Every structure is written in structure tokens, then in C-alpha cells.
Length: 121
Length: 108
Image 1 (cartoon, one colour):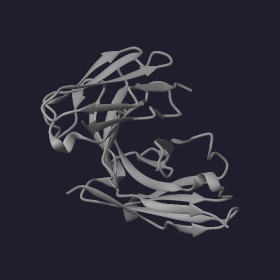
Image 2 (cartoon, helix red, strand yellow):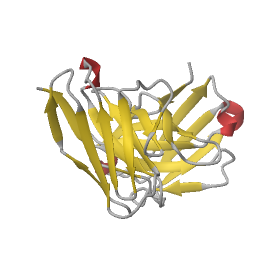
Image 3 (cartoon, rainbow over the protein chains, first blue to last red):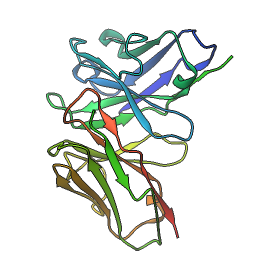
């Protein structure tokens, strides 16, 4: 089955850094744009960042702009999220999700199980 | 930023009944709206894209309608596995991509 698997979550102090990874398999990763979406405990979904297939186009939510950096390595079928200057409000489950649609954004059709980031002193 | 408002917050129904979930956008999103289902402890699952197109593998009892600012997700003849939280998401004027706050569909 097509799948993505996140890793790299953990407990970090406020102001600290963490790098999340997402390993893709059984689809042509280099052809698909990708996203990070997060969900704070007991809350709804929040889109975090988007990266196009070739990394030419990158977007961030205002809440993480200037602190988070999305990147990808198509040779390794991997997506990353470098998170710096972490805050309590960044505590969430972080999902990696594939964009449905090569030339148009239809939604997110493949999701991982998520990796948990806890920011606390 | 486009704000999506879902109603009701919670919907209590019995298996076999029809569920009607609403999503209203603060400005027109044309048909650039998707619906997701999320069960406890699981990742979201794409149900509907472009307002009315079922994603791969989604049963026919799920249907979406609407355009502009008002959208509906209808689930006909509820199955026990349909009780979950449902989110709408717009990708018309982005970034940012935005989600509604969710509707919890619970067993009555």
C-alpha cells in the first residue's frame, strides 16, 4: 500500500529544536507535493506547511513562519520539517500528508499515523 | 484568511439514519473544498474533494454538495464505523489552507 511514516517527535524544552522526518513508499514521491499538518491535543487540524514536488514552491502557516523549515530529498523519498524556537503551543501530533493532484491541489489523500511533539520545560 | 464554520458541533444519530453536516466559508471558495473523516487515535482520511467527488475507496453512501460558501456532507444509512469527527478544508485562496473546527458524529 501507498504509505508515509513520520518520525522524530519527542519532548523538547521551549526554545529548542526538533527535526521531523517522513519516509514515503510505494508511490512516486518525486512527482507529488507534500504537506505537514498538526493537531494539538483535543483540538482540530491545522495546516502547517506545503512543498511542491521539486521544492520550487514552499508555503507556511503564519504561526510557524520564520521558525519552521520544510524540505525534501527526492532521492531518499523523504520529507522533513525543521522546527526551531519551539513554543508550548507547538505541542501537537504532526502528520505528513501527500497532496492529491499533480497539477492542481485537490486535498490530502495519504496520511501517516503522526509523530508527537511535546514542548514543555 | 478564509474561515470555515462547521455545524452542528455534535450530531447524535442512530445507525441506519442519514447524517447531514454543514460547512460554511467566510468567502467564496468556489468548489475547492474537501471533507475528511477522523476516528480516535487515527489519521484523517480524505472522503470528498472538489466539493462533490468521492476519493478512492470511499463508499457511495458518502456524498458532498455545494459551491461558493455553503457545503454539505451527507452520509446515507449510517454504519457503525461512520461515527467519527468530520472536517472540511478549503484550498481556494491559499496559503493558508484552512480547516473547519469539526463536527463530531456520535451514536445516539
